[in-house]
Length: 407
Image 1 (cartoon, rainbow, N blue to C red):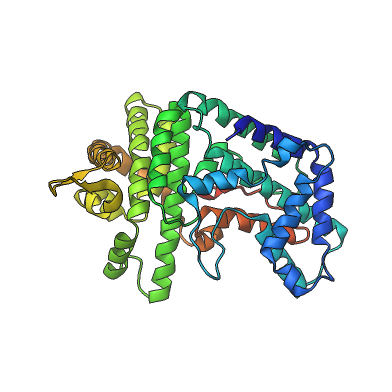
Image 2 (tube, rainbow, N blue to C red):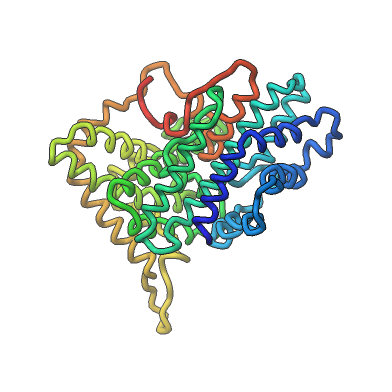
């Protein structure tokens, strides 16, 4: 993928933000359009991207980049699974237009200022979507250039919010959170997740790697907690009901396995902070680790010997030799090594973690409304973006803030 050319293209879009937003507002001015138009995702997506790619001054080579990031993402194993009747994919401005149109049809259609405000939000969402896809191309040219590419993505993200109007929510600030966001849609080719995990382990500085794992552990655990809560309500059983716990374990091998891959480097960093007396770093890491194990603390803390069974994805981790004997694949060997390291590290730091855990106990009678509706990371981004449809409503909450304790 021509990474640098995509960075330059996004910078071109940012330099022409006002022109593009005016064009998007024109697409949103659809009060008299038929209902079929207002619900046609493919058509709206084409009209929306035309606002970017038909700008005066865009070159032929830049136009040819249209759609290439998405194609590369799907080709690397992240094609979203078809879920009839449900949106399953990265944040999609066309889908967000459909939701906006639905709200306006049932309330009141906004004037130009209201449409411009939402047009700015859709512009932000499109740039974030592109940056998510670019975050999955950080290591394409080798691990040696991944850190520099990450800095370029962060630079574009900073530019995006610097030029955004003050009434726009800063949806995500840290480019290191984009990698997990890009992997949030449900897919069928599970091996791609572990290939990315291996790239992360080799491509970044220790600081960046820890921050990526902190973001991944928090978002993956949040997804699992929301899933458990959903099934708890659906079945009318308590969160610690045995059947609910077992069904969760039996259906989440991928998420549990990926949590192990995130928790091992976090436990390593936590142990170093504990032994060196770095109290602030210790607490920050304890926060991420506690969130990571929270979907099933019994399994991750008390019955660690069962983690191997509940995280074993056989078609990825095992193979059969010619003589019929089962062996681990390279991916399986790495996973088993991480399981062994997890068991060793969680045992060594269990005492200080136990001391730190009460810091993160939920306040009595308080809860996060975002935690109630959270399914996938993309859902949070979409929900915060939809707040700009409400007149005189300004939220400064970003994705990272949802997973941080305190006010």
